[in-house]
Amino acid sequence: MRKKLLQIAAAALCLALCVPSGHAARQQESMVRVGLAHGSGALAAANLENNTGYGAGYRFGYFDEDLGFVELAETGRRQTAITVLRASEMYMKNGQYTASDPGGGSRAIGCYHVVLGEYRSLEDAQAQAEEYGGFAAWIDGRFQAREGAYLTQEEAREAMERLGGEDVRGTSAYAVNVVETGSADILFQFDGGSGTAFGIMPDVTGAEDVRTWFKGYKYRGGFRYERLGGGDLTVVNILEMEEYIKGVIPYEMSNDWPLEALKAQAVCARSYAWNKITSQGHRSGNFDLCATEDCQVYHGVGTDKSNYQATSRTDRAVEETAGMYALYQGQPIEAFYASSHGGASERVDNVWNSSLAKYPYLCGVIDPYEQNAASVNSYSSWTKTWTMEELARRLQDNNFPAASISSLEVTYSELGNAIQVKINYTNGKSNTLTPKMLWGLRSFFNVSSLHFTINGQGTGSASGGSSSAGAEIRVNESGTLDTGGQVYAISGTGRTAWADLEDLYTISGTGSVDALEASGGSGSGSGSTTPAGTVVTITDRTLVLQGAGNGHQIGMSQYGAYAMAEEGFSYDEIVEFYFPGTQVREY
Image (tube, rainbow, N blue to C red; front, side):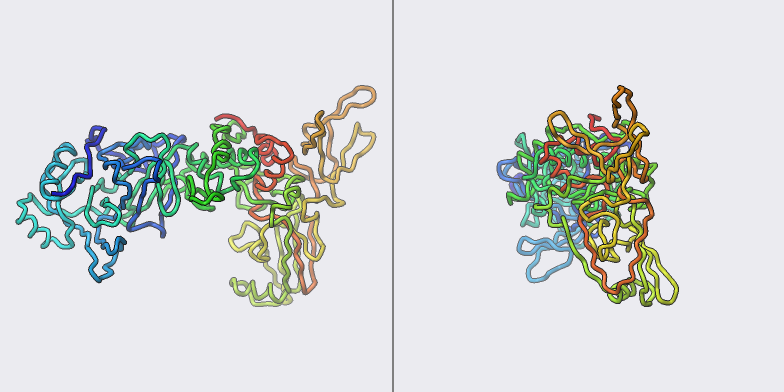
């Protein structure tokens, strides 16, 4: 007789029809669904292992429409490593699971089973299954006792006649099997059809902090396994928002960075996640965010490497900003961020196919702080060299015309970033590239940011300095002050901070108060270094690009946040600087 591995579920069986796991009625933005394996990365077999000292054993069931966990069964605490398999033809050899037969003594885990009986409770199904060395299953809202995992119906029927079973059944294309890792014996089978996916909540001990290994990283929360379209397993980590943010911060920023920078990152990550949840960005996969830089990097508690894991410091940054969002007109913003901007972020409509009217806080700012982190930022300055002939070949390799280049016309924004390059050919034709294009301006030059000059010709230094085209300020209409495009305020404590002209006033000798007014440039509330649309024409055959920064140029500079934190700015001041017009508040 097989040793009993499953125990009676603590929760009663829900017999009502369950809604699909990705149901639109779900409104709990406090919960997050993170896709760990999906699309081309979906898995035929997915392992879980308890992190020793952080809970033991597993509970099986499903997540309801509000992402609450409904428990059906559980293992004992000694069952520390399990594997979820798609319930179709699978094979096990030397503890490894494959979807095709590797031969050489492999063991099949097939699609057909002997049905020993159907029951209203797990306890009854488990008792019957144990008599025949079988397993309990949950099939469309009812428990069954089943035996075997045969590849063919014939094999299963022979076993049924021998055991005196009731029937031979397979499973739907959405079913999963759970086995003890390294074994081919089924512990539990789940088939909720296309509407209800299998869920696991690790730990049966009541541990306060539960962590589970999956594909080399430790995660908090639960796991959902869904065979979308009857394919391999889409694995989703389901957990509370604050626990999710704890799993983002140490991988988007180094865990030893200044605390206020980590806090600023937490606010941005939380605001970004909220927008992904409400917009249902990964609706087709039934999750909210992916775990890569395509969304934001998420690795849970991390590895056992000290420099790549969550720490008490990164957790503190999340806890001390819990519930805090960057808000614009009362709503959480799309808080984009990048490693560094090189001296200025950029307007969203100049970089992506987005509207500044829709995202007014992504208007770009001159950044005087980031350069103070140059000693720790490997992208604080860089150089790239091309010849016109090399660029022509690069264009040809990317399906542009095979023609010689006569000149380049580079258009700069008022913030000093390159936002367009017109390529003029010797045959009189031309092509125009912008950052908005899939293979656009950055790809053309193979550079890491839009903040650069070519052969010394540009409109502002690579470190965000000003040009002669900077703004002037009229003072009481009796004189002007050349700001060089940057205005700062000095507090009573001596701290210097960038200042928005809209917030500054002058007091004359007679006591009259007047608002400062910029007379030059066309910036967006951030100061201005360059008239919009400034064009630099390059005819040299060799091009030397000198620049700074690394990333898409939108929103917060992470190295800028580092520098601001080092200078004593608080996390809310950092966030509000990079997203003009926003406020960091609870939501």
